[in-house]
Amino acid sequence: MEVLSSVASLGISVRGYDEGVLLELIRQLNPDRIFITEISEAEYKNFTESDFYSSLGKATGASIIPSGVDGKQFDKFREEYIEANLNSPELSIKKNMLDLINDTIYNYLTQYWKGPETINSEVTDSLYRAKHKLFSSVFFELENGSWDEMHRTILDEIKKGKPTDRSVIISTVESRYWFKDHLNLLKE
Image 1 (tube, rainbow, N blue to C red):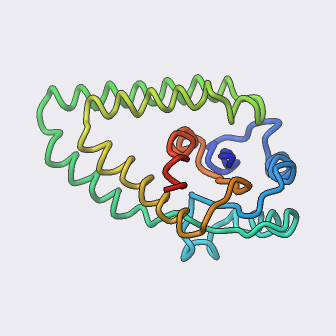
Image 2 (tube, rainbow, N blue to C red):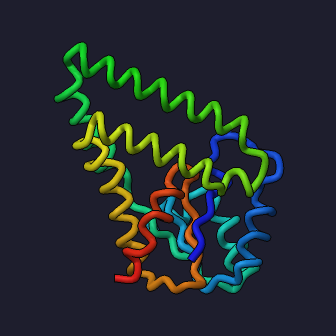
């Protein structure tokens, strides 16, 4: 099973990685199912990228399965956690440090990304993996209750679609490492 970063999740336009390139990458994989992790089935009709994903399904013959979840519950958890725990100067400094690290990683990656090879690379995955490991070491409950829990919920949605070895998961660029690291859970 392959996990690819969506074009929309990059936040910038990357020369050499547009919808046509992503379509060709997926066509070469000859998938039976394409799981879209950015949006839920309910949101799919209103998602601006839905036309692309519909055309992707037609071009490949694969089933398109929106597998995202409503992120509001995870956003609410995050807001409540921050409100309850970030009133001390020490915790505020830690949060500011993490924000700085996040900005630094994103700025580096936007310079590094040149096409599908760099966007869907172990370098990109490693930086985001390290970022979330650091976030987890500073704010474990927050990272576990929002980032990890949201991704576990999406993984459960993917399981419902009965993925095979020929299936493809399209995720946000930051989430790609998480799904790659947890592909073994889809076989349980």
